Image (cartoon, rainbow, N blue to C red; front, side, top):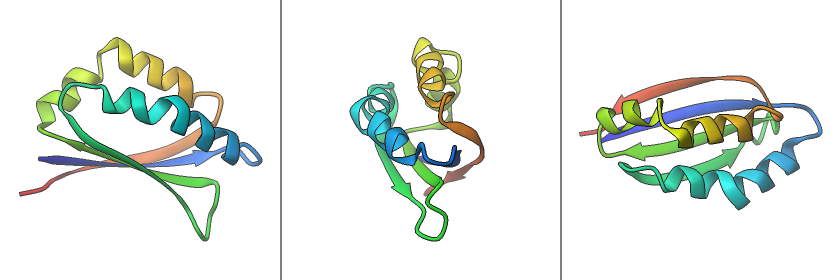
Length: 94
């Protein structure tokens, strides 16, 4: 199993709109990707402009295939108006 942890920095005053877009479309979109086992989104307490996205994948191959899929293009388009950057890490969970 692979755990992806993405920190997303969201534009000031767009946090609620971003959370609503993720709830209404983004999380469902990610959950529909082959190989995705679970998706969670959390908002920072100390820094409310920072969100953490956790995606549990069955394997790195599934994640790699997603990066070139039309769903990835759609997900990036959803994030673009809100995001000012972020960081991503992957962890093998045995």
